[in-house]
Length: 149
Image 1 (cartoon, helix red, strand yellow):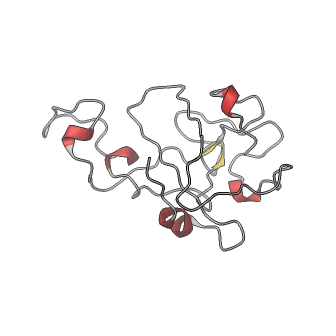
Image 2 (cartoon, helix red, strand yellow; image 1 turned 90 degrees about the vertical axis):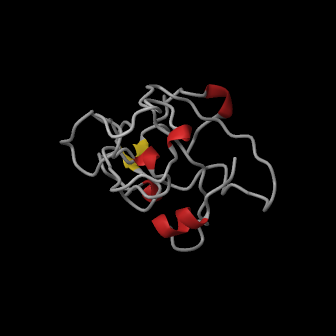
C-alpha cells in the first residue's frame, strides 16, 4: 500500500511493515530440490523445518490475510517488528485507508509489473495474491487469488 516500483526496499512510507512473522507449519510439502538453504539435509538438525516456506500456502497468518502492522498482534515477540509510524502494532492491513490513487485495476490473464526486495536472507519465500476489496477480505479469499509467476 503506497509502494513504488522505483523505490524497491525503501520503506520510508511504512509500506514494508505489513506481514505475519514468527508463524510455523506442521508439515513440509516443498520438495528438497526446491529449497534454497540446506537442500541436502535429510533427517538432521534442520533449523528451517517448521518455517512457512517449507509448505507454501499452509502457514497461518495474522489479520485478514493483508498482514498486520509490525508482523505480529502483540508488542512482545522474538525477532522484533516495527509498525509504520503512527500505527499501533498488530493493526490489520485491511484497516488501511483507501489509496488516494483509487483501487488497483487488474486484468484477468494480464501482465503486471511488480517489485519485491529482500532485506534479510532467511531462506524465505514470497507469493503474490489478490483478493477483491469489494467482497469479504480474508485469508481464504487471498488463497483463492494466488498468482503464478
